[in-house]
Length: 234
Image (cartoon, rainbow, N blue to C red):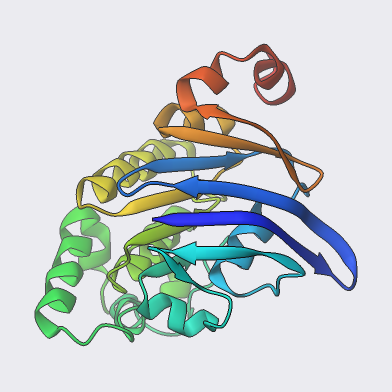
């Protein structure tokens, strides 16, 4: 599904990620974990085409993305739900969802996904005419995830989906990630809650100072002493 080879990216000539490589097979949930400021979000932004590459290569379903701009990557099935949600606060819930479907020409699939969003998160259906900015943090995260689904992605990238979400809703968010995978969608997940991320992931990558320093199954990384001491406080 996705092959990332030795990518590098900088902010104002200051390297943020160095020689990051990872791969994702169709139908997997893959997690990227690590401390703040180590390059996790930059990796997702580079894959999405929002950060320029200084080197390396990215391919999706065998297609080189080097010359594909960010908005066209959505049309090829690559969608990012960014950190902080980035909703249009003065637009309604339904307007935000429909904006997520800009790359979808199939009206039947668009309506089907809209209904799936309302069925999965009933609060969104109840508040479809309400301005997005008036929702709680957890409700906004639900909306952001569903807006990403409206683009009919093959690969959905989620950046910190539990950020700013009340604890009682975090479990619901992770349960929904499982149901999204059951729809045949591959997931690349960046998450500060290392335990929950690796618990749900088939495989994981640990990033430190812009480099991948460890990889393995979610279960193996959860049991790794270095990961437990550095990120789980155990």
